[in-house]
Length: 181
Image (cartoon, rainbow, N blue to C red; front, side):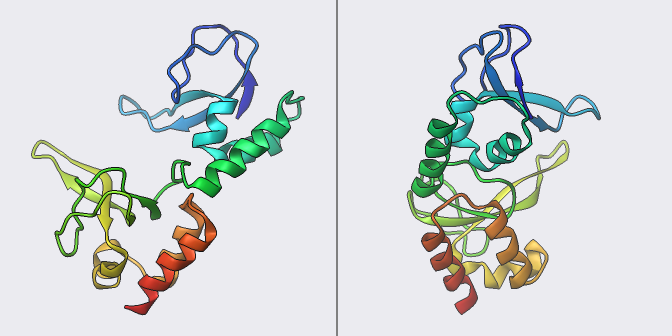
C-alpha cells in the first residue's frame, strides 16, 4: 500500500534512510517471525521503483491520491525491469547470481557469478528447526530436479513468468533451456 508517512521515524528498507513525515512511502506486508500478524516494511517510493517495481505498480494503481513524481517513478520501474536489478517477486524465479558461492541443488557445482539461475523454495534443516528458504539450480539442471521442487514444467514456467524481474528476452532464453531438457 502507499500512504503518507505518519511520522518521521520509519526507515526505508532499501536505502536505510529515514522517511520524512508526509512523504509518500510504500508498505509491503511481510511475515512476522515473532507472531501471526504480518509486519510492514516501508520504502521510499523511488527506492521501491528500483527494487520492487511490480509491487509498486500494483500499489500505485490502487492509490487514489496524487503522486507528484509519477513519470520519474514509471521510468525507474521500467529501467529496473529492463536492467534486471529488481528483486524477484517470490518463488520460483530466475535471476543472475550475485556471487559465485551458491551451489546447484542438482549437480552440486557452483553457479558462476552473473549467470542465470533458477531459485525455488525448499526446506532447510538447521539442526534446531526446519525453515524454508531459497535453493538454486542451473537452468540445465531444472528438468532433472522437477520431482523435488514439486510440479510440472508448465507450473514452473507460469511461476517464472509471474515472479522473475529480468528482461523478457533473457527469461524466454532460460525457459527454452529448461524445456529442452
